Figure 1 (cartoon, rainbow, N blue to C red):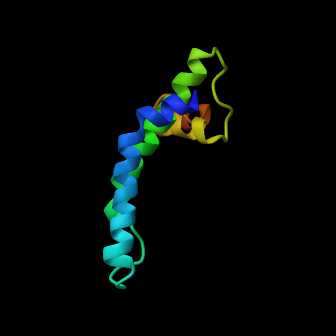
Figure 2 (cartoon, rainbow, N blue to C red; figure 1 turned 90 degrees about the vertical axis):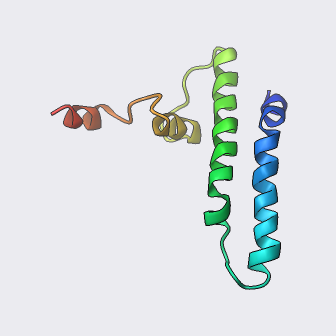
Length: 95
């Protein structure tokens, strides 16, 4: 379940958390930068991909249907090219 996903993604989460904490201490508090995005975005994206892939695999293992349109998992599948966003976009790009 989710505990196994969290365990498998723990190193990526830890790296991202350390980055945010480091940014907060060394850049935010001294007033050098307000947002950690430029420093920590890649680490967050790696953690997010690990977690979302884990959730999708868990759904598949349980025999659940694909995520419904409009959900975060469905959007992730679109981002990763696992599904085509919609038929009208696909038809127009084929021309």
